[in-house]
Amino acid sequence: MTIQHTDGHRTSPFRSERVAAGLLLVAAIAGLVVANTVVGPRLLEFMGDHLAIAAIGFDISVSHVISDGLLAVFFFIVAVELRRELVIGELNSLAKAALPAIAAIGGVVVPALVYFSFTAGTAVVDGWPIPTATDIAFALGVLAIFGSALPTRVRVFLMALAVLDDLVAILIIAFFFTTDVRFASIGFAAIAITAFGALSRLLRPRSPWFLSRRPHWPVITAMVVLAVLAWFFTYQSGVHATIAGVALGFVISRRPGGRAVHAIEPWSNGVILPVFAFSAALVVIPAVSLSELSPAFWGILVALPVGKLVGITVGGLIGGWIFRRRSGALGIADLVPVAALGGIGFTVSLLMNELAFRGNREVADEGVLAVLIGSGVAIAVSAVAVSLRARHYRRLRSQPVPLPQPEPGRSPSATA
Image (cartoon, rainbow, N blue to C red):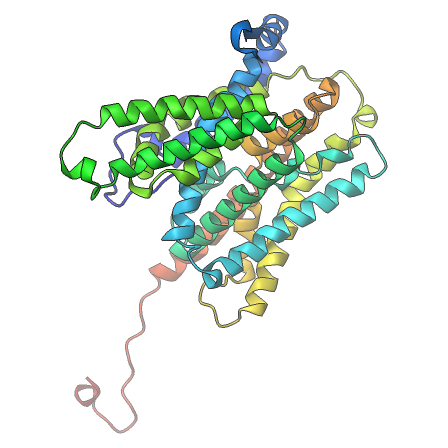
């Protein structure tokens, strides 16, 4: 998720959408390659090692430090952006949100149905959320590389679509991947989150604390401590720990939230997401024939590039038909590139895969391969679709604007 700042300055290359997408791709390829070398078994063993603090009953594996801990920072950024869009951005009214919302629904329902068509009646049917996700960082990176000539409305539509897609992913994680809930821990997490939000109000530009020029570091330090406590209690509660990042992103005051994201974003793009992509792609390629692969593999592989393309396109057309007078509606020629970009699942799909198949390592590994291949196909298709559409708009802009023709019987000077 890339936050667009009003000052337009980029102080770090890791704020670039192109750089973020490139790092994700390189990290995933590196993880897949390393896992299939002689150091692969040792690295996989290390990822399974546990860090334990017996005094507080805390136990977590190295892989979960990454997927539950570091990724919570990414979801914090997602939540801040989502809240901003809902308050002052492209989704701040029902009318604005309607068109991308319908497209997003299509982009969730159709891939899930495609997955069901491959896995119905099998033990892997619970993996249906995996192909419903869109990696906004990767999608925007591809758009930045190949679609710089596309009009702003296409990018805005993609942003709104992806933000809503992230909201659906958050809800799926919260409701479908939560087990053995401990309500006492949820209560402590809620207290920490509430206190975090209250403290953030002190950092608003017009707050008494801010206007009195008091130092900010005590407040920021306390907020960091509360954020860690919120994550700890959420992890202990049985709710997936990334939800703590989501909750913190929703309660933080808007201005301090924007500044926090500005500070964290380079670390998220340059370290957190690549590390997660590398660790998630640590998969030993199974030595099996195509016929022996799990139905989940084929369901994900087809649902990401095909299901997303069809679902978002159909949903967008239905939304455009319902809201015919809305200027935000896209024609099919603009919808197809956006829908193709939506098939890049990557980060969130890899997380969903880990959650859905955490009890079946073999199927989980096949799911990772399917996400990588399916997202790779979506990247290739979207690159072509976006490039062709961008070329169309460049051609339109290069055409000379026709001058007004004089009316019959009148001189050119009279027309002027």
